[in-house]
Length: 199
Image 1 (cartoon, helix red, strand yellow):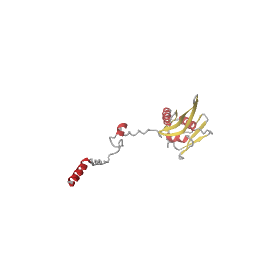
Image 2 (tube, rainbow, N blue to C red; image 1 turned 90 degrees about the vertical axis):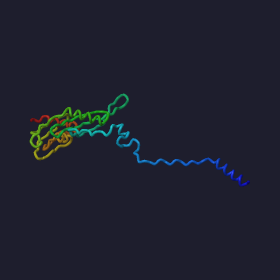
Image 3 (spheres, one colour; image 1 turned 120 degrees about the horizontal axis):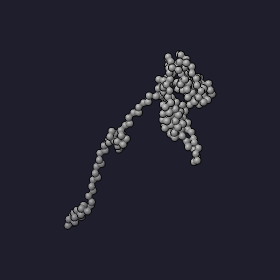
Image 4 (cartoon, helix red, strand yellow; image 1 turned 45 degrees about the vertical axis):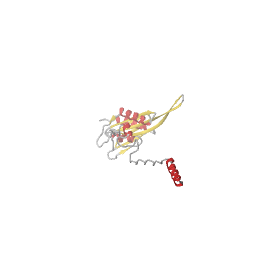
């Protein structure tokens, strides 16, 4: 009788105990790239429309003379902007100087480049990428003289040198006869001198 009671208690305890379910196994991790990665056809590439095409190279080389931060005084204080002077040329006789002002340096450079293209001149070469005769010009306080010098290469300083380099002129000597340190005026004086060359 006692054995029967003990057996009933064991059966009742087993029935009352909740069944413990085994936890589901974790899903195997795959080597998928992260969401929005640079994979082909990914979301990031879809948003941007794919890689950008390379920018076409300009036919003109450029050289920046000056970049300055300038201020304008207004009622609320000062407004700052940037002034950029740039020289462009193709080293084949075309050269120009431009000035651009904007609130951002990139916009100022673009404006200066457009201004330089608008005011480009064509230089008449002599034998050996030199000039036919001595020329000189004055622009504001800057006075520049350019003389042919066969076999000497390009001898010039300040912003006159990049003007002659980008025009493609060699075997010349340039002299700045004024004490002006203004690079823009020196470059424009060099342009005026090159304009006076005779064919």
